[in-house]
Image 1 (cartoon, rainbow, N blue to C red):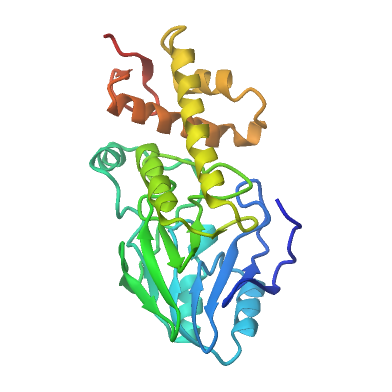
Image 2: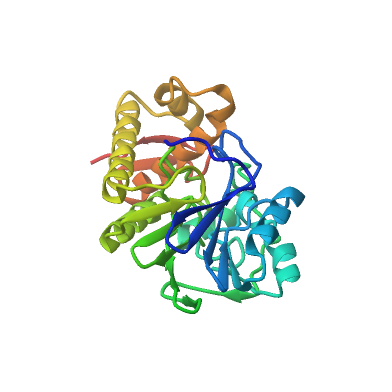
Length: 300
């Protein structure tokens, strides 16, 4: 997946685009969060990252005398968004995002959230509030460059990708080093597959993800992610064919080689598949759809 870059260094990764790696490596962030600077005299900052003094200093040093037009946030996870307010205040630029953390949820996910379902501890930035909301098709002009916002839910309901010609910044939707965490009610498998199809239709030359190296074979990677989810769905169905089960038991049966620290995230992924299967009428939840329900194959 490429050589690990050095945190704090501005490196050109596409024409007119520099990447600065934040110093926040973890099992969920890989090497750390990628912050992107797009443009030259006029710049947009994509995903400022965590509120870290060293990362803030690195971004400011790389910007030099450039005028920052906007601070763009792909989604309201803390490793992407928490530096945004402070950076924007220093630069005198607005923060643009899809909306507050709950924006963009489907009716079903909104009902699950209203019923008490919360995320799996992956770090929602509950305080995130963009200065300006930007939706699908929104544009940011940078004097010769145009960034187009693409609403790409799946990992997060209000997740945005940004297209710069045939280069797309994909946040946490498509990454090369790992499949995407889908944790309801913020994550939605049905939406994820639709967003993958949307990105595939763009015919991008290069994808620049929120974590890890650039992806130079976008169609192949997106195809792999779709196939991976289909295979996981088959595993869930095969396990339920042996009898009704709750999420912990299903996860233990499917994720046999996953480190214990990542099992909670795996359980959220399994729940995302079960929600989609319930929506399709292939699986039933008793007594009602929830993370603690018992799941069984639906009767023909």
